Each structure stands twice: as C-alpha cells, then as structure tokens.
Image 1 (cartoon, one colour):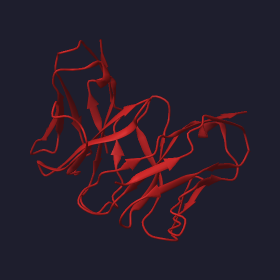
Image 2 (tube, one colour):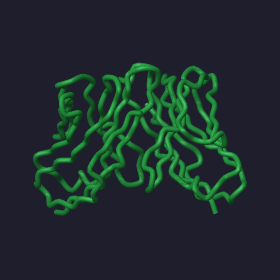
Image 3 (cartoon, one colour):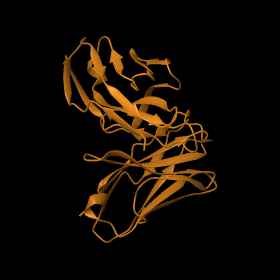
Length: 113
Length: 115
C-alpha cells in the first residue's frame, strides 16, 4: 500500500538556520503531496501542497517540490523562526475514491532564539 | 467561519467500556474523516464519510465504527475499550470527496485515555 517516510527528529535549530525535512513516498498511482504542521495543543494545519510532478508548493517561507523521479517532497525554509517550532508531517492522498491521507511519522522541530 | 469542533476534548474511560466522540465539520463541508494519533504509530486513518456514506475505512478492528448525519456532523464509537486505544482522535473535514486535492481542516482532537 501507499506509504510515506520522513525524517523523524527531533531536531533543534537556532533562529535563522536553514531547514530541510526529507520526505519520500511510495504510491501506485499519482498522489497529491502535502505538508501539515501541528503546533502544541492544536490540530493539524495544511502548510503547503502539490498535486502533480514538478509542482512547487510554498507558504510562509516554506517550499517543497514534487519530484516524481525520486518520489520525494522535501520541505525547506531558508531562515527558521522561533514561531516555526512545531511537528511537521508529510502526507499523500491518492486522488481517487476518498480523501484519505497517509502520513509520515512526523518530525518535531524546536527553534531556539 | 467556525472551524472543526470536536467534543469532548478530554475523556477518561476504563477497559471494557465504550465511548462516543463527536465532530462538527466546517459549515458546508460534506466530507468528514477520522484519524488516530499515537506516539508509536503516528497518524492512522480510521474512516471517511461523505453524504452519510462511508467512503473508505482504515485497518482497524470492528470495535471502531462511525456514522455521519444529514447535517454532516459525525460520530465515532469505540466499543470494548483496550489500553491501546488511548490516543488523540482527530477529525478532519473537507468540502468535497474523491479527488484527493481538497484541503482538509482538522479539529483540535479528543484525547482519550483508557485506564
């Protein structure tokens, strides 16, 4: 079945550091790819998405590019802030039949001032 | 527009009991999905409902069930609770179903503890 593998951390960075969170997927079809973020005590929020190969999703300084050839969707941010401290989840949806999301295990990021 | 609401936020039960969790989607959203979040297994899909019909079901035992009402509100039920059912149960709603393209909006979750 479909699956998502991502860096699990936890990771601690200093403010203004560069962030990369690796995510690779296995899917039989052509999935949509998502990054969700979970702040402490809250539900998940969509950070960005890409629905086809070579699409780049971006939001709040975060970017990720859908790479079909490497089945990857790595999340990057050039300069993290303390407010970016959260848990980040990579996910896929198979674009057919339902809205089921398959999630990676999540990575906890802490950004120190 | 109000977000996804889940009640109750916290619940403590003992083994063998049953529990019902409720989810009210964003107004106008017709698809509701449920997920179980645990430290060991992460986020796992339970089921999705659209227009009162179950569209998809995850790999959970029959003790886990759900339903959706005509106003799109959804409930999930867990019978004969086990210690391993302790988790954060998240509900998500989206406007449509079946495309895999829709943004899903998550509620804050119900924290279930089974003693």
